[in-house]
Amino acid sequence: MAENEPADICFADVAEEPESEIDLNEAIAQSFKINQRNESVGFSMTNNGADVKQPKLAMTLGHFWRPGSELKIAFFSGTDWQKDKVRHYAEEWTKHANLKFKWIEYRSAPVDILIDFDRTKGSWSQIGTNSARVSARGRPSMNFGWVREGVKEEKMRSTILHEFGHALGARHEHSSPHSQIQWNKEVIYAEYAKPPNSWGKEKVDNNVFKAHTFDTVQATEYDPDSIMLYAFPARYTLDNKGTTRQTVLSERDKAYMRFCYPKEAPAAGLFNTIEVASVDKPVTERKSVKYYHEKYASPPQLALGLNSLEMAAQRNIRVQIEALEPGRETFLASIKTWGDSILKNAGMTWLELGPKLAYIQSGVVDLQEFWRWRWLPRANAKWVPFATPFKSQPKVICFIKSLDLDHRNNWRFKTYPTDVSTDGFKIHLDSWGDSGLYGGSVTWLAYPSDELGVTSGRFSTEDIRSSKDPKPDNTSTVFFERPFAKMPNVLMALDELDFDCQNDLSLRVGTSMVREKGFDWQLQSWGESKMYRAGASFLAWGEPAKQRGGLTII
Image (cartoon, rainbow, N blue to C red; front, side, top):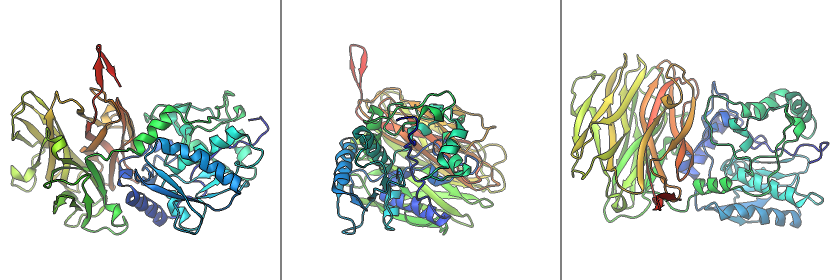
């Protein structure tokens, strides 16, 4: 790029931001309906320009299409030459993502992605499933202002790959706090004040600088070779170090698409109440029919865990997840509250313990089984015997399944195992401080510690910060005890929370990337919620890495 050329920088989603809270909720609901996995796949709030004081839930969630989908793509305008160019380069993504593109005529059928070629509006795209919401209104969800005669081929290829990366749910790589770009703000303010952007300082701050703030958050490793890293001229930085235009997908770009759009369906699933009801209309129970990942000869045992929760302040925290009416193909996922509690939204995950996972034992422990009085002790423990003793000491993890906490004091709860032996273990369902614990139940999973192709563990906000330093966005990396040959399946659910009772409780656990050696986790809250501490446990399973000559082969 010559120094006097305008910078061809894309800022995804700036052309069609949610116009209201209702619009924002619709975007979240549509994202979940298209792909339930979007609830557990997200991003660091710092990476996405959200206000870390009052972040919006939508800023943290993924907007990925359902793996295996066929996306319908149409052109709002453009010459045959422009359309052929886009089709040619866009298909590169489908070599790595489990998706298909179907190119159709506009207005012949509903479209997921609608492409325009307005050269006065630069190049940009909506993020993932937001494209369908915008296209349904008859508005382009993607624009290519730089795909035209006279533009260098490598620039067009780079632009097309970049914008389709956004359309598949990828964010800007230079948004990572680890990029540490030293922006020359005055130069950028002046540049973006010019047409076609004509942006004021506030819009530049929101779409450039806030998205690139380096916080104490530990983000995923910066990829300087990513197609999602756009070229910045040297004059945009104080150290006169620009970034290089990438024209092909990097190895990490390809790996990220394999993570977002896997070819194999795991023996696990997700349900969030937003799929079936608006957060603006709380109800006591929300249900949805869910299909297993395969048909079973008899209903499989399901291990359930809570993975997100948003409840109103000034009310008890009461939530319970259940799997009702189990059949050979489906069951009814249920999330409910009771009394005067207000459940805004919640999410659950489950593991199907079919023949392929027969080595796992699981069960549920409820506090009401061993305490009968109304206000329960803060420390509660019970011995749990295994139905079949293990040959050697197994690994055990626990998930929250239900809670009933008093609203007058801070909400605190944690479950964990101790004294694990071949015959059983002691399970703990604890509160602390002045918290009022009325009830709770937890799911436990146990498996042989020497079983190949499976590992587990837990992570907590206390891994990266003190509970005296509450933050809404917490993310870091877990490394597996033993690596896998390829990306494994990962199931995670909450096992601990500590929140201020004066504000709503909002909490979710998720991941932004899974690799053969580990994954990046997130524990996030939003709105006015104040998270002192939170934690989650995980189970990972898949093809184990091979050992050869003392070396691990991945």
